[in-house]
Structures are given as structure tokens and as C-alpha cells.
Length: 216
Image 1: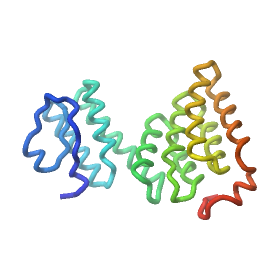
Image 2: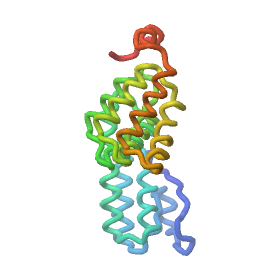
Image 3: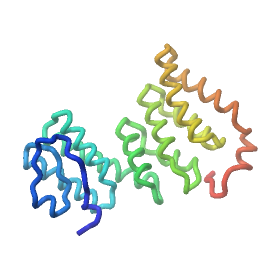
Image 4: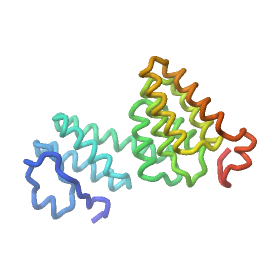
């Protein structure tokens, strides 16, 4: 049996009984009342596992639907869509994205982040450095109303200048607070990014200090 199929998940609904046969097979058992819909969702997860995709986010997506009492077919469609986004993110973040990066990439695509931006984020960091956090911030900024091109420009500039993960992550939270205080999303990002930039080395110095393997 494919080891990716051996999935252990907590039941969302305590009243849902677990079929012994499914336990024995290691198939993910989900709290979907309709047996046909549940089996359809389980097949989607199994297919994703066969393609080498991380399944935890798919199980979480299914459980989210259960919690919201969504129809079984709607849950299946949501799981299938998430699997497609994970696969797309894997291609965009090649050559060897981590599970965290794949999930961050899929979440970015889900809120409408243009696919080429994932490649641009990946190119701004060395190949071995995770882009999960910058992708999360990009997604948050765009969801808050910052124009996608402006959000990408500011984040990639910060990455290339050597901003730390904490500095980039802090921008997302700060922009959220500024928007709540009345600033437009675009202006809030401009102000916060400029503040971080003032603390960073010059572009020439950042280039000289960049780890070997940084992509142009």
C-alpha cells in the first residue's frame, strides 16, 4: 500500500462511527454523513496521495466543510480544487518545494494571486530557503486589498535586500492594523515597507552579503 494513504485524522464529529474495514485499509475516514459523498472525498484524497501531494491540507479542507455542514458534493469539489492548486503550486515552486510551501502556494492561488507571482517569489530567495512565509504575507496583503503587483514588488524587494522572516511577517500584521486605523491598503504597505527598508543594507551591500546560490 502506498505509504501516503496511511493517514490518521481526528474525527470532527464525535458521533460519527468509523467502519472497521476503512480503518484496516488506512483510508482517511471523514465525518461526512452521506456514505457516497464520503467515499468520493476519500477517493479524491487517495488520488492526490498517489500523485505525491500532501494530504493533510485536503483532509483539513474536508473537515472544514463538515464543520460548516456543507453538502457532500460541495466538500468533494473543494477537496478536488485544493488538490489541483497544490499540484499547480508544485510546478510553480519547483524544483523541490516543501509541504509548507505547497500549502502556502495553494492558498495564494485560492485568493487569486496570479500564478506567475509564485515563480517570482521563488526566484527572489536562494533555492534552499523556504518561501512559505513570504507567500503567506503576499496572500494576506492581496486579500486585504493591496494591488497584487505592488504587494509582489514590495515583498520581493525586501527579500532581495535581506529582510528577515520576522521583518517580512511583521509587515502583514502592521498593514492590517494600519488599514483598521483608516489607511488605504496600498498606502499602509508603502509606509511599512519603507520603514523596514530603512533598516536594511543598501542594495549593493545586500548583494555582496547574499548567500551563494541566490538567483538573479
